[in-house]
Length: 363
Image 1 (cartoon, helix red, strand yellow):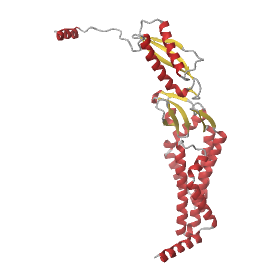
Image 2 (cartoon, rainbow, N blue to C red):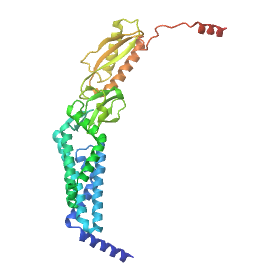
Image 3 (cartoon, rainbow, N blue to C red):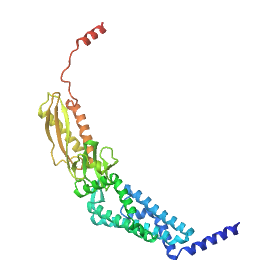
Image 4 (cartoon, rainbow, N blue to C red):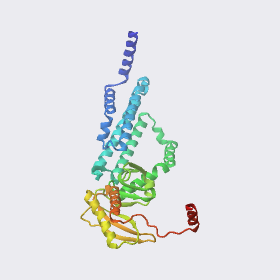
């Protein structure tokens, strides 16, 4: 049995040696190393492990590695197609790596360093995305031409049916890929919504920091719930976007409205809201103490007066935290000063029927 297995092994080894050259062994060895260290290679290509594209690039690289292994394996059994199979796999691997290297060069050359929540991030710009997209297109075109020539299928390029089918597929799927990509390029070109910007979109109840803008989607860090939100670019640009600040570390002017009943003088309310501001200012580094608070009347309503406390925070990233502390301070101080924050009851109607029933119940 052992002798039989040994003979099969020697037969396979001789078969492999007759098909593979020294260069083929070198390619397989490099491919194996790339497969084992794919995570480190992708991280060197400019993707952080927290980046959503990091995992996608790792799995795509491993898929290309496995494809190369499979093609070389098939070359053993289809010796007449050994060269086309091996060259096809090698072309796919080289194209993938070259496209990523081209994209990395574009990011480092034309990207912009932004600080998001205290962390510096190298983000894409319009130029880097366009150049990276061109790099992918060139790599795909070169790979296609090499594979066509290796398999001796150049006659396909002369037939309008094949090219027409490709154009038809691209045109029929334009509603899937075109809107988000075009809107992504517009966002990057305008430079209004950049990584680190704090935006508010009331239509979808979004108050967040922009983390990254790609050709297909924009990634946000929600300020209320502290998790990431992925929004297609076409939907994002269709909404009314309020840009609060272009940098989450910049100062931001904020307002807090309170409905307070009539019966208090302006001096009392101004003193109350100033104490609220001072309480939050003494609590930490949220509020910019160099900018004094401003107290204004927004509306004299039927049931209450709407008072507005304007203040400035040191970091837009802590906007929600500042709102929480302002509301907490107002709640605690309202008890101490006897100023109610609830909407007062303006009048009550005495219902005779209810009064009669109440008197009858007492009897």
